[in-house]
Amino acid sequence: MLSVTEKAIPRLTAQQLNDYNRDGFLIIKDFISETTCNFLIARTKQLIADFDAEHYKTIFSSADQAHASSDYFLNSGDKIHFFFEPNAFDSNGNLVKDKVFTINKIGHALHELDPVFKTFSTDQKFSALAQDLGISDPILLQSMIICKQPFIGGEVYAHQDSTYLFTEPQSLVGLWLALEDASIENGCLWAIPGGHRNGLKARFIRSKNQTKHVVYDESEWELPQMQALTVAKGSLIILHGLLPHMSKANLAPYSRYAYTLHISSAHSAYPSDNWLQRETPFMRLD
Ligand code: FE2
Image (cartoon, rainbow, N blue to C red):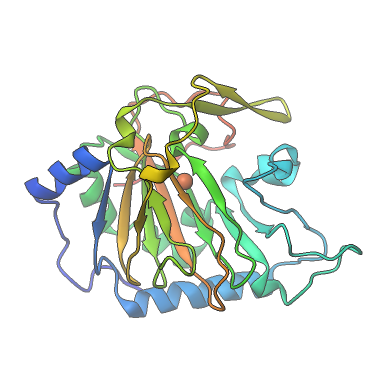
C-alpha cells in the first residue's frame, strides 16, 4: 500500500528546528514505512523496465558534466528522463549489464507525471514539513530517483543544491528519502555541519542550449569536515539549499535507492537562467 499517512503527520519540534538551523540538515527516522519504500522501489524498477534504453543513452556524471549540454538533460525539468552511470557502456556503446543495474538517476518531474510518485510527493506530510520549515506557499521544483547502483554507483562531488536550483531569496530545501539503508559502504550522504552559513560558492546556469558554472568562491571544500549521514531505510534527511554535501561511489554489492524532492517558496524568484526550466509553472505543494 502506498501511503505516508499511515502514521500521524509529524511536526518538527523546537529542538529539531534548532538542530536544522545549526547544522543545515536534519535526520528524521521512520518518516516513511518499509512498505512504502518497497513500493516506490518496485515502481522505479517498472519505470526502468519500460524505458527504451537503446534510444536514450545519456550518461550522468558529476565529474565531467558531459550530460549537461544535451537536450535530453536540459529538457528533463518537466519530464521523466533516465540517466546512466558513466561506466554503463562498453567501448562499443553496449550496456555492460542489465539496464536496471546501470541507471544512475531518473528525473526531474516524477512528482507530477508519474501517478505513484505524484500521490507520494503530494502527501500532507510534506506540506506540513514545509510549513514547519517556514517555507510559505511551497512549490515542488524537481524530483529524482537516485539509484546508486551496486559496484558502479558513481561519486557525487561536493556541492550545494542552490547551485543548481537558485532562488532569491534562498528558500530551497532538499528532502532526501532513503528507500534503502544508506551506509558508508553503499554511498551514503556526507555533509559539513553548519556549512550552509558560508554562502553560495557557484551557480550552474544555462544560456540557450549550453550550461556553465559561474563561480563566486574559488576556495576548496573543507572535505575533512564532511560527516557521514548514515541512515536506515525510511529515514528522511532535510537539506538546507546551501549545505555542502556529497556522496561517495557505491562499491558494495547492493544498491542505495533514494528519492529526492526539492521545494522552495513561491515567493522566491526563480531565475530564467537556472538550468532547470519548464513549459508549465511549478506544482504547488498544498
Ligand atoms: Fe545534492
